[in-house]
Image (cartoon, rainbow, N blue to C red):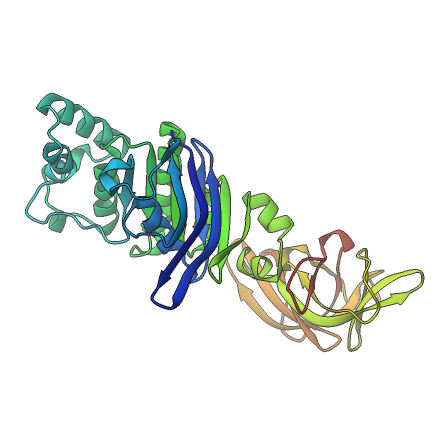
Amino acid sequence: MAHVSVRKVDIAFGTVSVLDQLDLDVQPGEFVVLLGPSGCGKSTLLNAIAGLLDVNRGQIWIGGRNVTWAEPKDRGIAMVFQTYALYPQMTVRENMAFGLKIAGLPRLEIENRVREAAAILQLKPLMTRKPAELSGGQRQRVAIGRALVREASVFLFDEPLSNLDAQLRNELRVEIKRLHQRLGATMIYVTHDQIEALTLADRIAVMKDRRIQQFSTPEKLYQQPANRFVAGFVGSPAMNFQAGVMERADGGMRFRSGAFELPVDVMAHTGTEVELGMRPEHILVGESEGQDEGGMPATVEMVEPMGAETLVWTSVAGLPFSVRVDQRRRLSVGQKVSLRFPSQEIHLFDRETGARL
């Protein structure tokens, strides 16, 4: 286990800035996910930690050593890439052992490391096969095994599941989680898939526009997003957003957007332009208009069955809201219902800055 510290790092390609004064602190044994859309700099940051890219300014520390200008082989890291990059002419055993042979390790130690990694990743029945005889998931397990035998202090994963189909992604995600629990190693994992991030990470660094927008636990990112971008990027189905203004009424504050009004607990200046955010699973669906006290009349416009749950698209005072309900709840297009918006689940963001109020 090793501590990883990225300190005020700048990276630019010519005149294009990719990372700007970026800080990241990963504790020993922690599983950190770098999450963000394509082009936000997450793979660039991972490659800089690995030593595959030079930084323009700043420092990178691993295990208490300044490795900013150290070669990748001297950083104590192992990396798993998006593509499997296996040697096609070699067997699984030979692929896993090759790096250790090049490093000059004794034959017995190589065999022991390969055998242990194969047991952890359930590769024993496949050791004599070549990559062409393996499925995509098996090839990626071999790539992980090749990194695992190095017994590195830090493991880096660059979107290792993105080339797999949905079922294999789910299976390997569970295996990576188990691997971390078994090894207790420091792991940094890049993905644009928020489900991977939420299920794997101890903490998630959400990235956008060359910087980390929020670095926190999955629970806090979901419950207390720092800004409008994080709120919209984390959570599935996506959070509902509506633009409006703050008004003072009855001694408190209200959010208003056209004919839609909601009392809110946030204090703000009258006329402040904001965006209201509400997750689909937090909106409560009641009976038809007039039968649910405190509810707002709504009309069902579309129903999307999703297995264990159903996503229902509704219209409230002319505004669209998606609502997640149990699949046993039978709703149909055109049906009149009422919606309630619990005040403790309402999020408000400044429309100009995007910051959470």
